Each structure stands twice: as structure tokens, then as C-alpha cells.
Amino acid sequence: MLNIIGAALWEIADSANALRNLDLINALSQSQGQEPPLGLQKLTMHTNRGDIIVRLPNDLRASDTISGTVVAEPKGKTDQQKQKNASELNGMVVDAGNAKLGSAGPFRWIIPIAAGKVVFRLLDARGKVIGTSQVDIRPLAANTPPRNLPVMPTDFALPTVAQAGKPMVILGNFDGDSQTTSVNVDGHPCPILAESFRQTIVDNVADKPGPMQVTLQENGVESSAVVHNLTLSLDSPKTTLLAREKATVTATVQGLADVPASAFPLTLNLTNQTPGTISMSGGQSLALPIKFEDARQSGGYRYQTEVTAITAGSYTISGAIQFDAVRQFSPVPARFYANIFTDWMEKLSKHVGPSFEDLVDELADLRARKRWDKSQGNKYQDMLRD
Image (cartoon, rainbow, N blue to C red; front, side, top):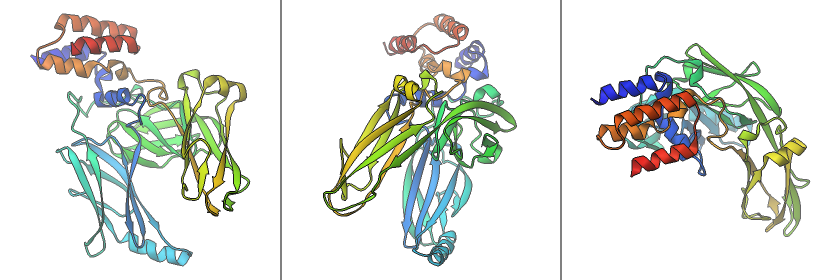
């Protein structure tokens, strides 16, 4: 019976386009007001020779196929020392339990079926464990659609904005294999850092502010959009201070002039990375809202903060532009309009909740409107909870 109901919902909701990647929809919904669950995560394993860094998508789910990259960062004060340590690091292997991921470059990994934690072990050339790290694996989402659905250009959502020098996230119907994916910015290829069924994360190679053409190809299907590239610079006349000496740090964001109002508000995050050396006016971490009205007037954003040396030495302030996980993606794939389908399907599977006829009427209306109305969505969620 459930299969028949599911098939009917599938047809009413505009076929495969509406029901793809329901776990991605949930992730986007849960991200509002929180740290976005989509993007890149890094596992770092330290050795005497340097660090081995494993870059993964941070939406790992049981039984997913994903891609990532392993990076070796050798220690050393001279090029000769770094080369020697790099040779040692390249002889090491990252072991994910059910697969060896190598010591450098891209890899593909099929995640174990059981959810929970997976321990990554760093092995030296003799097979000895010299470092470990672990990742959380979420269970497979309920009612996850089939993974062999045909890929269409409307399956992908490119971001409205990106930050130069930071990873750029593209959402969509991916196969988890980065070898079948390519992304370029104004004709320049972007290295793929990681990929899951729901997203691919690439290195944004553009370094100039302003609109740029981003083109994605996944299994021969192309999707393209204009993305607004933002640059962030942090400047100070002095980066080494004497005890109790003060300096002014200026943060400047450029590229905001043509960013649509729907992408705002943005947030500029500034963090004092050397709290033992300096104190920063306003606190060790600042979250500064960038409003559409302010950005439209000047085409950029500028903020100054004062730092005071606690002890003599150099200091570091880091910065990043934070985008709302839901607002930044445009155009939104048709399946995102179905972000209440998971709850409906779960209720149907238990034979509770609204009648099937009522659900069909609601779904038909949703298809006709072709837009996500948050207030209506909340009403549906409340109805189902009751």
C-alpha cells in the first residue's frame, strides 16, 4: 500500500525532480540560525614530520559514496627539511577501516552501512599506527529516494555568493565520485575538494571581486549561473607589537555592489587567533552583520577594530564571510519545494495523520505554486505533529 501511495505522490510532485535528496532538504531547513551542516570538514593527524589532513564533506551518511582529498603538510624551516619530511609523509597511509585512502590526492570511499563513528588511522610505512581521528556518520535518511535517478540541469543549485580563497559549495544530485564532476570559474578549473550525494565542494580559484560565471558539469550534464565573488582583506600598519602597544586592524569586504537583496544579511566573522599576545576590542570573536542597505550604498563593507598587546610579539586576526545556508543558493531546484514530503511519508507509513485525499490536494497545490512558503510549511509541520 505504501508503495502505491509513494508512487502517486511521486507523480503528483513533478516526478523525480520533487523528491530527490530529501535529506539535503532537511539539512538546509535545520541550518537556519545554526552553523550550516553543508560544506567541508577536515581531519588533522599530527606527526613529527608534519600533518596529514583529510578533507571530507560534512554530511556523511551511512552507505553513501563520497569523495575527498588527502593533503600532506610537511614541517621544516628550509626547503631541504620540508622535502625530506614530505617524502616520509608520502609513505604513510590513511586507513578508514574498510578502505585505504592513501597519503595524498583524491580518493573515493564507500561509507559503512552502520551509522555512528568511523576512526581514521594514520599508518607509517611499516603499518604502525601513528595518529588517529574520527568522524560522525549519520544514519541513512528515512525515505531517501533512489540514487540512480537521471541527472538534469535543474538538479543543481549554485550559490549566489562565494568568498575568494574559501571552499565553494554547490548543491545537487551528485554521484559522490569527484571524477565525474568538473567546475570552472570564468573558464578556469576549480579543484574539487570533496563530494557527497548532496553536494560538491570546490576550491574557489577566483581572486577578484564581482560577478563570475560558474559552470558545473556532472556526468555530462551542465548547469551554470552567475555567482558574486567577495574578497576579504585584513590590514594593519603593525603586525608585531610591544607590550601594551595598540594597533588598528581594518577589515574590508569588496564585491557587494551587485549582490541581490535576497542573499542578505551576510556576517563578517573576525577571530583573534593569538589571545595570549593581544586582546581585541569587542571580544576575542566578533560577528558583524552586513546589511543590504549598507552594502548597496558603498558597494563594500569596512570595519575597524583596535588590538592591544598583552605581551610583545606578532599577532594574527582571521576573518571569514558567513552566508545563510538557505538564502545563498539560487536558483533553487524544484525538489526543494517538497521539504515537507519526508514527514508526510513517515506519517503515511504509520497510517496516521491527514487522509490521503487531503495530502494529494495539498501536493497538487504545492506543484501549482512552485514556491516554498515558510509560513505554510510551518502550518503543515504543526498539523502533522498534532
